[in-house]
Length: 123
Image 1 (tube, rainbow, N blue to C red):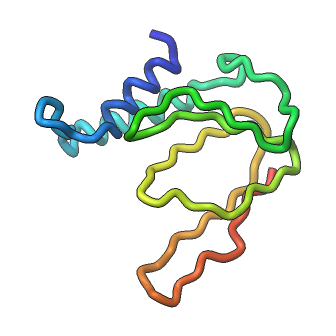
Image 2: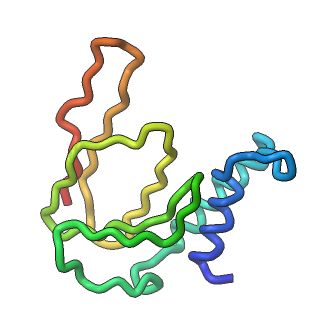
C-alpha cells in the first residue's frame, strides 16, 4: 500500500467521528494507531511527495480532507516566519521533511487573564 494512502487510512480510523456502525476505537487501539501513524510519518521523505522548490514564502498542498480531519503539506521558503495561530479542537501532527525549523509553541492556561503572545515559527 502506498505510504500516503496508509497515512490516510490510519488518520481516518483515528480521527473520524464515531457512528453507530463505527464506534470509537478503544484506548489500547487508539494508542496503537497513534504509534503506527507516527511511524508512517517518519517514513515520509521529500522524494515521495514530488514537490518542487516553493515559488512563494508559504505554499499549501491539501492531500486529503474529510469533515473530521485534513492531511496537508506546507512548504516554506528558508527564512519564512509563520504568524501566530492556533488549532482549536484539533490534534496536529507535524513532520519536518527537509531543512530545519525553529518552533515556539504556547499552551493557553485555563485562566481568564491568559494571553497567547510572541509565538512564531522561523525557518
